Image 1 (cartoon, rainbow, N blue to C red):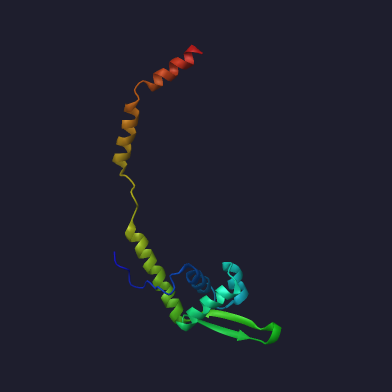
Image 2: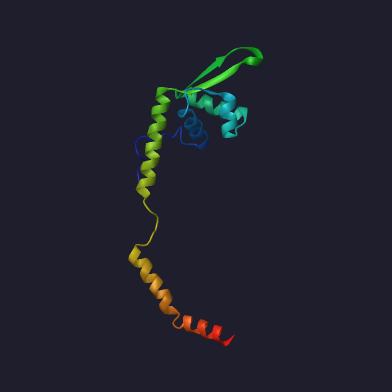
Length: 133
């Protein structure tokens, strides 16, 4: 099976996918909100944000100064397009797999009939056991 178009190796690792998915649902997000929502350390989140920023998938804006400095993050148009393409590619992979190994209805009823036929008289034995009590 070939990789569908739109599959993005940069977004695919679970941490980056989680970051991008979270940002896709917002206009801007504060660094602490992203960190806490995804249960990441500051350094782990910073590394992922830097990687995505280098690819121009997101914009990082620092506001204020000193102790009140805030880092805000948002997806760029390029990042949003890449995310939507990646999600579409993942859906294509999943849909292409189809149902695993579900037997057709006829096979299920045939298997059920074989189980019943394999133990003839089971019901009669149970009734006799009850009657003898």
